[in-house]
Image 1 (cartoon, rainbow, N blue to C red):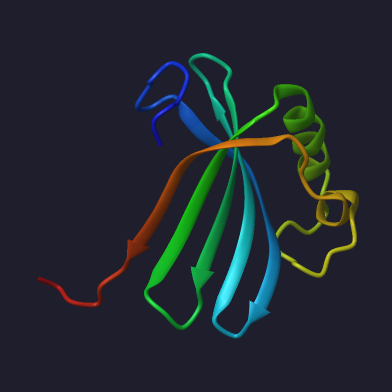
Image 2: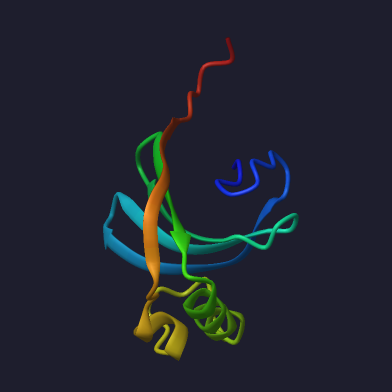
Length: 114
């Protein structure tokens, strides 16, 4: 991901992820926290992975730094980040401070070895 603030191609890193939903047998949803190590910009992403499909969607938003840090600290304390039924504060309180959409990508995986 390219940082929307400093344009760094390699500085943005995912620092936390929670599995937040399994809406039906086809889709898993993950909340992600990203941080630009170069300039300190903060981002939220929502990753939707089609369980039986070959696609996933990654929506990335700018985040208010103060609310991002609070929700990131909750996410780091989650005892079961890979359990969408977890009842910890990170899973139940959600994320506030989501700003402008900076990236919306659909990625298709192919089983072809072409």
